[in-house]
Length: 112
Image 1 (spheres, helix red, strand yellow):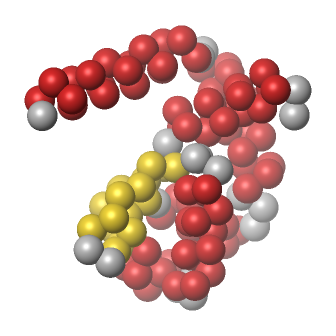
Image 2 (cartoon, one colour):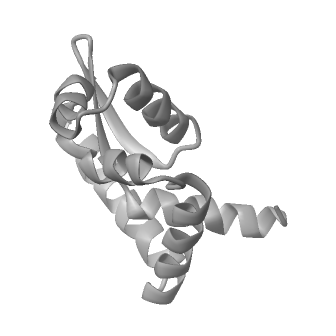
């Protein structure tokens, strides 16, 4: 079990080193913002993804309909732009600059 965690951490660190400079990360986040954070509500929802609160807790905290938050969260999950875990019936989402950067690096490599 411990080896699996260590291997995963090393893979993530290697991926981080391979990919990017600060400039590339900033450019990727700008593209992400332009493409996915297209309203004040979406910006609020994304900023609230802290890896600790459930979607229900976030929807109450930012005064947003749970369904709206779920749809946006699922979009980001489907595009592999965030980290998430499920605890019971609750989904917990966390922002991931690494995933955003990989997403746009892959798009660029594919010529999208």
